Image: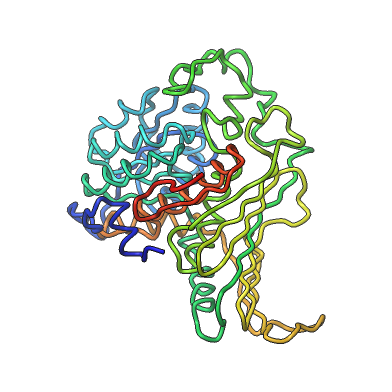
Amino acid sequence: MPDRRTFLAASAGAVALAPAANALGANEKLNVGLIGCGNRGRSVITECVKAGHNVVATADIAKFRLDAIAAHLATLGVKDKPAAYPDHRKLLEHAGLDAVVIATPDHHHKEHLLAAMAAGKHAYAEKPLTHRLEDGPEMVKAVRAAKRVVQVGNQRHSGEHWKRARDVIQSGDFGDLVWVKVWDCRNWVKRDPFAPPATFDANQVKGVNWDAFLGSAPKVKFDPVRYWSWRWFWDYAGGLMTDIGAHQLDIVQWLGGVDAPKSVVANGGVYHFKHWETPDVIHGVWDYGRFAATFAVEFVNGYDGVGATFYGTKMTLHAEAESNGEIRVYDTIDKPKPDQKPRMSWKVENETPAHVRNWLAAVKENKDPSSPIELGHRVITAAHLANIAYRTGKKVVWDAEKQQIARG
């Protein structure tokens, strides 16, 4: 398997990793813009405000979202109402703008990030970084050529609890890591938070620029389900595998000390949410050469919650990965006893505030953040390969050095 240096060189086109933009003063406030004013954009921009920076502009293709984010920012004490633009390109021309948060549907990520780089703006690019496997190398190259600081929204990479877990797993005491099992199980049967809400009335519909939402995607008639539930349509996203895999596969590769799988197979289907195109239950199995990884994700039953287990030849690390969960490490060289106490344990915290602060500090200090562009590309590559395996019904073999599918 190619080592980290080989893969990074391939990812970045051998461009130096360190951005060369001028660093800002330690006490200088950044002027930040928000592209995409839905729930995730609101969460990230809220952390920018809490960190003391200025929100000077917002952009969205729907007027009701622009109105809602302005009202939300006012509740946070933002006195100067930010400029509101129906087009992200106009936002990027806003005078004095330093950086942007990109929180748009996946199929817009490439266009919006490349536009931000062309405009010379730093960016927080929400996960998953790419909609298509082939988009990654171009985005990596553009970021490094622009010499801007870009944080990809794989926020677990800013969790101190995961860094501690990595140190344990990669220690000699843990033994050889042989298997990683990660999962994310939720029950949206009773309430789907991405279903069109009752408040989505004709007036709001009139304010949606549907052609702009579609962008480069195939042209179809306006559909409120596609607009609100875009994550579950192949034209706009990769479903649960990319949306959730951006987090779970991040800790698989980071804590496991690998950059890319050798191969992947996947199975699943649409078993409950019949309006979904992407599967509502999907399982993937990756061969990383040194260990195997399995990822199970479904949104029809929440019994198992969100978690991860790392199996070593001497120890086992188990994580309840939701906020306020716990990470526990057990000695398992012998068969564990039912009442066995963990060798060590610590809490899991919400990583988003730390991830946003990490990006803001990196912009001011002119250095790479915790989840730079190459990392976002590597992680989502593993997820894209699983979707390809699912859709083709074949085992996909990956050549990480050439960044291409060798067989599948």
